[in-house]
Length: 288
Ligand SMILES: NC(=O)C1=CN([C@@H]2O[C@H](COP(=O)(O)OP(=O)(O)OC[C@H]3O[C@@H](n4cnc5c(N)ncnc54)[C@H](OP(=O)(O)O)[C@@H]3O)[C@@H](O)[C@H]2O)C=CC1
Ligand SMILES: O=C1CO[C@H](CO)[C@@H](O)[C@@H]1O
Image (cartoon, rainbow, N blue to C red; front, side):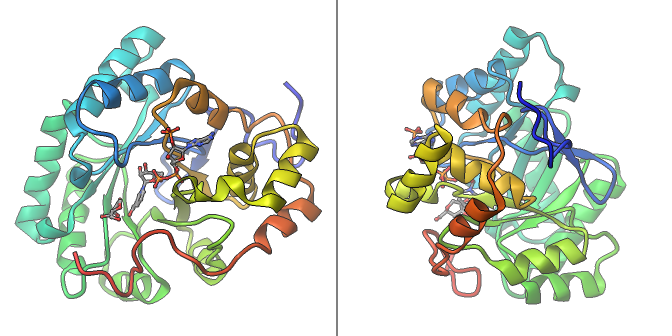
C-alpha cells in the first residue's frame, strides 16, 4: 500500500484514534440506521467484519440490535477474531433518559446484542432538562466497569458546556451530522479544544452528496468514487466516519480510503461546499 506521508496514524481500516479515556476507536465503521432487524442487518455486519471493519454503530431506536448481534457473532467466527478486536457502539434513546431507566436500557441493549459490554455508549440526543440525569446513568455504567467509554450525540457547544459543568466524566465522543454541506467548524474546534473526538453521522448525506458535480470532479482526479473522497476528507479533518451500506461492493468501497491522500487544495474545495445544510433533525429544535 502507498504510504500516506502526512497521516502515518491512519494506515488502514484497523487504524484507531486514542480517545480521552485512553481507549482506542477505529477511524472508520459501519452504520446500520434504516436497516431492518433481520437477515439483511446480520449479513451487512458480517460482511463488514469479514472485509476488515472493526467498528459497528447501532442504536436502541434503530430496532436492529438483535440482528446486529447476530452479524457480530457470524463475522467474528468467519474472520477468526474475538470480541476484543471489535468496537461496538449503541445509544440510549431519548425516552429512557433518566438514571434508573438509563441503566436498565443499557442492560436491554446488551441483551439484544448478546454482548457483555459495549465499547461506546452514547446519549442519542440532547433532550432538554433530561440529559444531565441520563449522563449520570452513563457515568455509573462507566465507573462500574460495564462500558469501555461513554459519549454523546447531536450535542451543540452550549449542550457540551452545560453538561461538562456538572459532569464527573467528560464525553469521549460527540457523534454529529457532518458532511461537505454541514462542516460545523465552531463545534469541531470546540470538541478538539476539549479533547472530544468528533464522529460523523450521514457522512454521505444519506446518499445525497454523491451526485455533487465538484465532488465528482475531485473523485475523477484521484480515480476514486465520490463516497471515498468524502470519507477521506472526513479522516483528514480528524473526524471518525460511519457510512452505512448493506451492499457488499459499497461496504468494501467505503473502506478503501487509506491508500491515498487529498491535497490541501482539494480539502479546501470540499470544505467550501458548506451550506450549513442538514439532512437530519436540528439538535436545537427536534420533537422526539
Ligand atoms: N447519532 C445520530 O443521531 C445518527 C446516527 N447515524 C449513524 O450514521 C450512520 C450513517 O448515516 P446514514 O444516515 O445511514 O447515511 P450515509 O451518509 O452513511 O449514507 C447511506 C446511504 O448511502 C448509500 N451508500 C453508501 N455507500 C455508498 C457508496 N459507496 N456509493 C453509493 N451509495 C452509497 C447507502 O445505500 P446502500 O446501503 O444501498 O449502499 C445509503 O442509502 C447511520 O447508519 C447511523 O449508524 C445516522 C443518523 C443519525
Ligand atoms: O440516529 C438517528 C437516525 O435518524 C433518526 C430520525 O431522523 C433519529 O432519531 C436518530 O438520530
